[in-house]
Image (cartoon, rainbow, N blue to C red):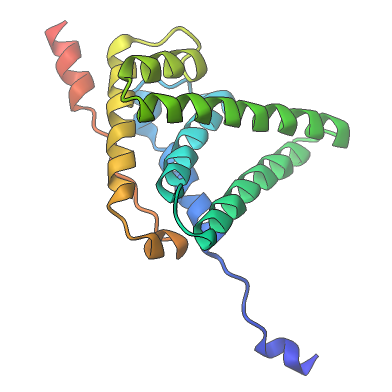
Length: 186
């Protein structure tokens, strides 16, 4: 028992990284200016988008980075599991919903990855329209979200891996200028 005092403290960088992803995803600008539905589904979609940006940044890095990304992913879905249980959803319902969320996550991130790799903004636009906006978003807002994702990915690419692994994830600020300019021109 005495030696337990000398054990390494649990690393909080995974939790901190997830909290920063969630904080960015919950910024009011996305719901007020980008037209993201302010629903549990809309918030989930924005967490997926920001988690994807972090995972995209860590892709191709060393084993420690891959393990870290997996730990953040696991923490994300543990948080979803716990949130549903707090809402009173039973074990079977939670398992079913988490499985659907994981499948949704992989489907979305696959389409986002392909669109980015192919530099295909039209495919990214379509993925956002289908997944985030449910076919009812305004084109100008969706185009602004495409632009934002590119900036978020570029911003994270500029961060040293060591900072990300320490939980010091910094996202770019979402811009509303593109949306305002289009609205005033239209």
